[in-house]
Length: 330
Ligand SMILES: NC(=O)c1ccc[n+]([C@@H]2O[C@H](COP(=O)([O-])OP(=O)(O)OC[C@H]3O[C@@H](n4cnc5c(N)ncnc54)[C@H](O)[C@@H]3O)[C@@H](O)[C@H]2O)c1
Ligand SMILES: O=P(O)(O)OC[C@H](O)CO
Image (cartoon, rainbow, N blue to C red; front, side, top):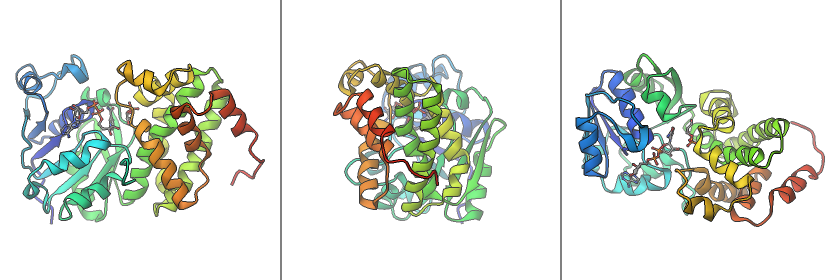
């Protein structure tokens, strides 16, 4: 029994946390939004904007920003993937026990190789994990542009109720049950967006980018199945939907990072220049380690790691991919 599902507490006041707070407010929920900076909380509460992340987008007055996490019926985690563990550790365990906790970060944890919901199980075993993923830029969600996402949980009835509690006129969550598939898809699409950006940054052509997208989909399917998820999940919003969006849109931070890599800039230089969060950078080595441990053929993940670490230039990497032994497409 997860009811009531009235109030929402969003942990993380960056672009995505603010957008999800706005979506929940538009769904009619009273929302608290945890931010780390008192001045930012003041701005959200009084000017109803979060300019550092969402420009002049006006936010709902029913979002209350705080600098300490507030208890609520629904908890939404929206900090970067590498910060989820520390954000959970900082929360009162009583806030999490028995409550639906929605993991919305898209990434795999460095060191542990864990998915976001595995981190939750580690940190708060009594919480009820759900994962939310799909094609959704924060500004689109915050501005009330039509967005559809996947919400996956272990109990179909609970997941449908939670989806209904978060759904609004412009935010449509589809309930699903494959947490593993949804999480792996959300994490890996960022790695492939780095690759697609690099293809464009290196001017390799639209044909190369589409070939990469299709082979990324095939590789992602192998990874999902090897990890215990369903390949069918990838036909949906969290799979094909988000892979396409992130790999083809200049709005994507991962794709932008990839463009810089394709132009020959080093990872260190791009980060030093103040690049926005690109989750694929931390996830790529984790994905490579997982592929190796599961014996999954993942040449694209390997290629992205080569680009990120500067161990080979783009021309050499492309030549290597194109000269792999010919194979059947299946
Ligand atoms: N921005 C998008 O369009 C979008 C869409 C879908 C999913 N996501 C995912 O959401 C996650 C967060 O991305 P974002 O766009 O909000 O990043 P962001 O860089 O805009 O904001 C991250 C926020 O998290 C805060 N933070 C970091 N560590 C924290 C901690 N320990 N406790 C509390 N707050 C902490 C930072 O202060 C910052 O405000 C990523 O995994 C991303 O892939 C983002
Ligand atoms: O800007 P990105 O690359 O982090 O992508 C944002 C969302 O994940 C797109 O669905």
